Length: 162
View 1 (tube, one colour):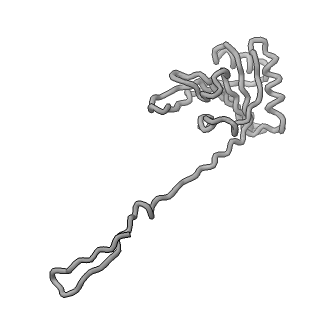
View 2 (tube, one colour):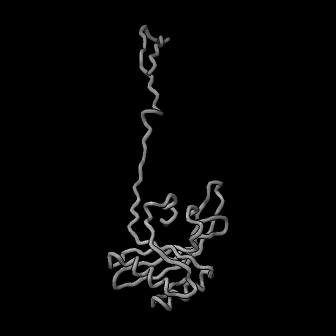
View 3 (cartoon, helix red, strand yellow):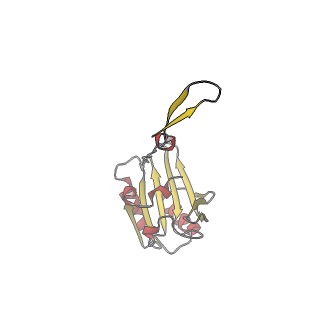
């Protein structure tokens, strides 16, 4: 805070006021707490996304369909695109997303480079449904591994919100 004094040229009085650093007073910090309320399955498989979807659709009686690629920007503001597939079960209001971890110029979740695909499931009816689903996915011969992950333990978890 600084105090300034001015002599008014048209009157016989002194103006005194305090100058405040308004940039400090107006600074607000916004903290966002995201809700990662979905089951997350990591899938390791050398297959291309469309072929993996065909096997998942047959094994799980689903109908995953291709959607517009997921667009993210890296630290250099370069665009990265990741394959995205979607399926919805109306009765249980369950959403399934299959996302490729390897994009055009990087990884969706860089700390999990060994994982080829992520399956996100919103509103899964069963509490342990993610583990049950991972076991069914592992039955596909072309899949090397499938396992549940805790999204809250991933550093790049915000990339899974779209």
